[in-house]
Length: 535
Ligand code: G4P
Image 1 (cartoon, rainbow, N blue to C red):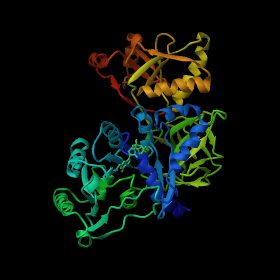
Image 2 (spheres, protein in one colour):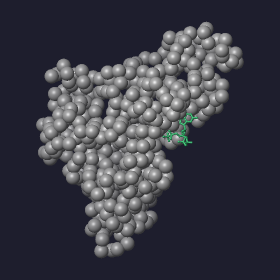
Image 3 (cartoon, rainbow, N blue to C red):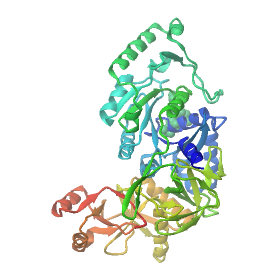
């Protein structure tokens, strides 16, 4: 059993793709699934999206705005590895959801648009990866369009992300002149041929040949550019060092075009070669801290996402549980640290083609646990109920709105609905110390729109989201509880609590926060909060 457990957990690779909107994340996801043999024809991912949309009204926003707001998981097996691809919403308003998903990944692929390099959202997402020391593989996409000088893009990665870059390949020009890429380790050349998902793609890597073989066929100016660039890259840039990559200091770089399916097989091969197996997780056991290994026999995991009411007729609620150890079997009973028991009769596996019932699952896998609201984001579940993972971070909202029902008789109903959506992680909810206001916090406006739409569709509530008397929220932390209480007592009109009852400072602007921090040494006003629900 333990040998099987080690083997199964050891062949899992759980990763997410991060990118600025439009860099090509969706296209790459689809082509990776194709390369991995998980889907047979392009368009299946989109078709699946269509089906989902027709069953879910609130995703109307997603359809109208052409964005994906709900993260999901896709599992595929390729060359004896089991890959769990965690899909993250790309729109910046949904970055909180993305952050939470990243806590469940062991590795990330960073997709850059070759013509744009590092963009604002790439930087933000990268910072979350750095917070968690998640190793990153870089895919420089859209080489079939005019691109920046590859050295310039690598310089940007080095300067802005402080990551050493180790190109595994070097491109031969870009745009109309794009001719392929040179494998810097083997010296072989991978000629570019325009292949699209529509014209049928074999799930294989590009063919390889000796550079001499291709010399006569290649535009001499492209060949010269390639040879000079490759020589410079080999001289000036480090070679790939797996340890530095796993520690989050170095990123292997691959060039390609997701749309034309070039470089995608190589990206998959890179994951196979370098991506880490599920890593140990920090856990706390009442008063001690330790690392839980993936082949530990106790079954454990944490909830990183809740998706509710995917089907409005069935009020279902699925908690996405990232397993961290043990062999999970269908029908198992798992417990939270607070002792709540959850019977997992119908766990869901999110295979690329459809949902399926999972019989067994291991560390690195994600299972969907249908439940009626017992589970929340950040909850730890284990066979004994004695394992608690470090919390999932909450991020300080950038937009605060006062929620008011148009029908004043519905205030109680509204509070319940807001709490339910906040538990799901759609938005945050704050209760000021004085008064009965309900303040909704979001990272972006779109979150508020989704909230309003769901209020109407799922709860039959017409809600006004109006400007709040505050614009900024920070969690207040202090080791001296008396001091904290005294601060709250003195600042009743500028404090409140979040959904978990944690104290929050509500200010007008950043200056207010700075002033409060200066006047109250010992108190910390933080932008993130790690949530430990069951203390
Ligand atoms: P995202 O999920 O990161 O937001 O990006 P997505 O894959 O949706 O890609 C954004 C646009 O970039 C799409 O074009 C897509 O076809 C295009 N694209 C992705 N990869 C490549 C590539 O390697 N080369 C080129 N030339 N284009 C690429 P669109 O016009 O916005 O959408 P569509 O009508 O093509 O679907």
